[in-house]
Structures are given as C-alpha cells and as structure tokens.
Length: 281
Image 1: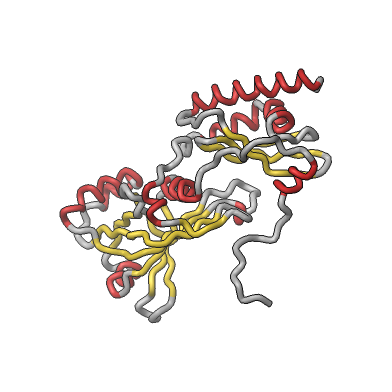
Image 2: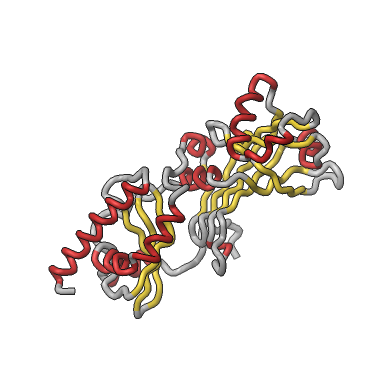
C-alpha cells in the first residue's frame, strides 16, 4: 500500500461520462467560486463554531468548546471570552488554536455533504487600541452579547489565521491559502440564497428541467431541484432514467442581488425554451 496521502475520493467522474456520451455542452466549464471565496462566505455566514485549543490540564490534549465570533476585515475570527474559561487559559499558555465552522444541514440531509472550514492559527489578545473596532464587529454578529460586553473579566481575542482546510462536501476539498482567504469577499447572495432556492424549487420546477435539458446537455432529465446559488451561477440535482447527477450553470454575468438573479434566470429560461422549440421538445 502506498504511503502517499490521497488527495480526493475515488468516485465516478460524471464530467468524463457526460463528455463521452455527448451530453455535456461544448465550451469551458461554468464559472464558480474559488475555494477561498467559498470558505470566506461560509465563515462570514455563521457566528458560532467549535474553538479548539491545547489543554493545560490534562496537558497536551485538544480541547473543544463552542464559541461565538465576529470577523475583522481579513476574515480573522474575533472572540469575546471569559478569562476564567478553559479555552482562554489554554490560549494564554499555548496560543495555537483552530475554529471549525459548518454549514447548516437541512432536515434529512447528509451532514457530510455540507460544507465546513477549519481555520488554524494563533490566538492573541486584542490590545486596548483595537478593542473598539473588535467590539463593534463582535456585537454586529452577536447583538445579544450587549448585556455582558462591559464585564471586566472578559477580553477580546483574535485568531490570526495561518492555515485553512476547506471541505465542501464529497470530492470538494483543499488547503486554502490564508492570503487568498483574507483577500476573498463573502458571496453577496449568501443571505438570500436560501430564499432563492426555496422559491425555485417550489414554483419553477419546469424551468429547472428546461435548464438541465437544453442548457446543461442532459436531455433525459425528468426532474430537477436547485441545491445552491452564488454570484456566478447555480447548482441543481438532475434526475432521469440513468439516475441523479449534479449540474452547474453559470449566469451570463455575476449577480449581486436577488433581483439580478431573477432577471438572469428569466433570460436563461427564455433561451432554453427557444432551444426546446428548435429541437421540437
């Protein structure tokens, strides 16, 4: 057995199968967020994660706790912690720490198919000069902390991110460069994505079948549901006689608002209907 670390799962390559059967549309693959963008969006969309530190007692063991956070401009998590807390005492002795943040898991869904990111770095106490900015960011993300924000035995700590592991579900994973993560912008549709997905699945099932049949090169699609949307495009699960397959389509131009997404999808379904009429579908 090889000692080389695997870099991905040994799963069927749907893109190769689609290409061989002639069902994949010609041209470059649709645009999608980089892993740095996906990771930054995931972390910015949450306010709570699993903070791990190196325990003082029992010495050397990983110690996990739940912590709320805000973010600074570079995406570094900011924590408001009690000086009595185990994770704070651990950080004073050994500043190495990590924060695991996960996407919400819909009811009945596989939790391992959802995204998660682990940010690793050094926990450092925020100095007095930077406290007002840290406090503003933390309270914006955690407004209920207002009632204890003045406690004298609490302090702000920042996790200065040096390494990031991103897993976006099965087969989508990588180490993300910390500089690219810091420079990435959270997706502008993150707050409205759930509403867009719910609306499309409840009211526009026919349009999604048309997208898959005539824009994504899957003419045998009988049903489709949207699973994700971002500024660059959206993803669906297409169903047909041969089974289920993941499908991604790109918007003609990046979208920053729900209204821009609506206009793009109206234009795309009109294009799909023209193509359906041409082939007599």
